[in-house]
Length: 204
Image (cartoon, rainbow, N blue to C red; front, side, top):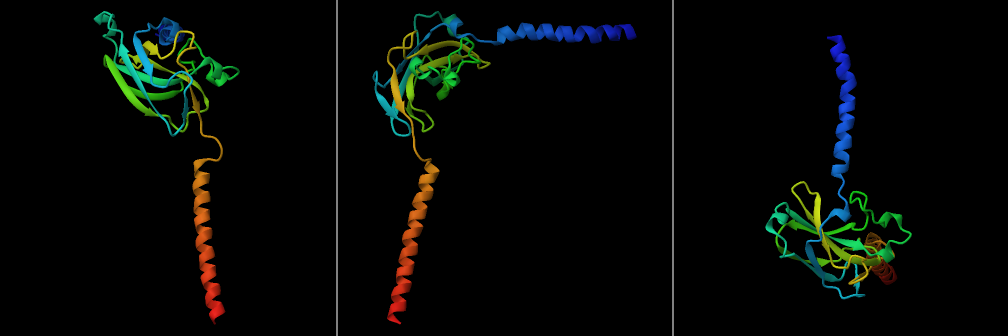
């Protein structure tokens, strides 16, 4: 019995290691392995400048109708995101592209996630958190486990066409602006108060 337990203790870690090795590669989704089955269009014209927190854009996507029905049977959701163009990734490791999508930092800003349909669209106001950079739009198709199984994007494979720019919000934070406005209002009220007090003193 003791020998059996000892054998199990030795074998179990080895089995777990083999299981992890088996699951590891299968869990990694490579961008290069994804079929381009979605047609994505973004409304900004090439080179157009959008201002974060102000401007709105429209994004549409549609499945390539030439695909066989069996191909899309696993499609459950569509996730659409802002993605950095190569010019805005240069010398910025925190924006770098990686073929392993778990490590990829190209598309960091989600626009929307919707249940899969053969076509969809969204009107999107550029969020205040979007930084100054050059972008394109990419849509990933997700399966029932939220793993990427296909994609489409508003630019070409080299990511050089249909790019647009976003000007992010710079300068003081909005909370500082609110505080400054409140302080200014308080100053005006205080000044009026002391003016009234001084007028009354003068009449006495």
